[in-house]
Amino acid sequence: MRQVSGSARSRKVRVELGDEASFTELPAPVKVGDASYFLVRGRDGYKLLSTMCPHQGGEIEDEGDEVFVCDGHGWQYEKGDGRCVNNPDFRMKAFLVTVQNDRLVALVPDE
Image 1: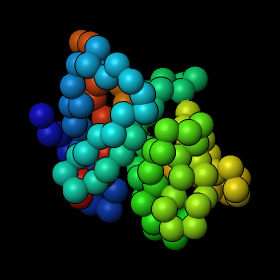
Image 2 (image 1 turned 60 degrees about the horizontal axis):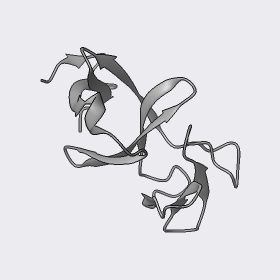
Image 3 (image 1 turned 60 degrees about the vertical axis):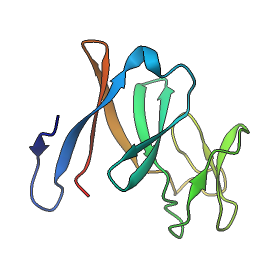
Image 4 (image 1 turned 90 degrees about the vertical axis):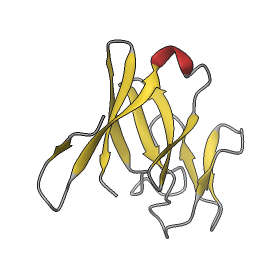
């Protein structure tokens, strides 16, 4: 299901991620088109965190520890909200995920 909203500059696409019950372990890797994300659940609900490092564009990985780690310079990000441990001015890009009829639905950039 694809639904476009917003202006041409910030075009967003509504994407169904699947049944909420199917995501038994979080964070969970999620691919939408060519973009990669981590599905996380924090204090404010579900969200997708982009795996592109906001520091220098490296790939953020889940190495199983308490934080995500950028493969480029080793910067670390909190798994619940994407806040950078090394520099609080940086944060992983986050995208809204809602639960609709027991299914997770995300609003992500149309790439």
